[in-house]
Length: 276
Length: 276
Image (cartoon, rainbow over all chains, first blue to last red; front, side, top):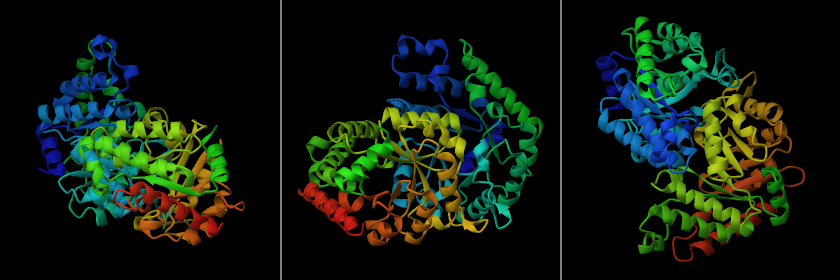
């Protein structure tokens, strides 16, 4: 089953547009992960993310581990491999997006595609489009996997280059159009569009039809859920992977961290569903 | 010593603008690396790159390991750590650039900065500017390290977005100007400019003053050395890190691989120097 088919099935079966972001920061872990069983940071990265994922799975349309939070630690990649293997085994219906924002010339991009899809076993990967189509080709060719390109991001710096005007429209709209009309030959593309710019989200939805959009920026970054759903959802009330990381992961730093994460995930899923 | 100071000293002392790119592809290794001592691919990645680096060091102004070629393999990160530790110990005067093209929101970028500078111990890292200044800040703040931003890349896809016209000039010139005038507060920035577009290189040099430029694309990608030096060098005949990876790494696939690599490196260094 392709990433896109798996995602559409999950939207329907779980009645959820919530993507659970796994950005594990050991400094914010509950005390138990500093105990003797976790002398190794990598072990704690795995165990914390596993617990959060297992607790929130029923509310999730996707999981999104962010590779930087693993790559900052020795042994982090082995922890990430174990985590994705666990997700694929325990929650086989939930697609896993590796958030890595890769992008390089073709011969190097081919190595990054092996990293994301074969070594780590992700269903989809986030990519940076700045280097153009041939830099995306080794990912696009893996047509059972998803390629999720940065379009208009959730951070203040999105204004620096993404909003520069090109022929009467901002750059990010050109990116959206190029991907929707030129790169998405096998229907395996999606875009990253920040929740913090809901007006832009509406324009992008108009450009890309029913292409899935990954939406970071609700919660800690301040994006408004109602505006995201109203501006970004497709006519059938799907089309979105609305991500929350910190708001779920660190809902409690006590012994009830998993239960609190599940509560935060359920609450955000329900809030999203109110506006669909 | 900062990355920039180390680079300037090395340009002078080695009389070289050659950057040796370390993109190890086991399928192209000499037969000896398929032998019993290298049952583990990671061991071969380390040993092959070490041999190439030791053989070419006297001709190099910088080493540039490309992380994707390590990250495609289990144990690749440990091999990369060992390699950079070896480079720093055996060749302490030669700066090491981690080619990773990272770029993400600030909290995630902080983790990537730890990955590049602390875990791997690189002097500099390549970065993608698409997400804007706040995505670069955690790297820029490490002002002893170098931040080398993609500007105009060497691949055909450089035309897709980098050359879109913004207010009468292509996007990549806006990127160059923003970095030169706004981001380079601590003088630790550099740019990636492909050898395959020498006319553009001249324009960028005019925008950025004496900022160092990392130049991929000579050799396998077809860039012309004379045009690069004439268009890209600063008035004192430096300012460039002209990269060659495949042309050096795979100069021979026989038992003379290290000697052949040294010969290819010397030849390219000399060719560069003829035009300075």
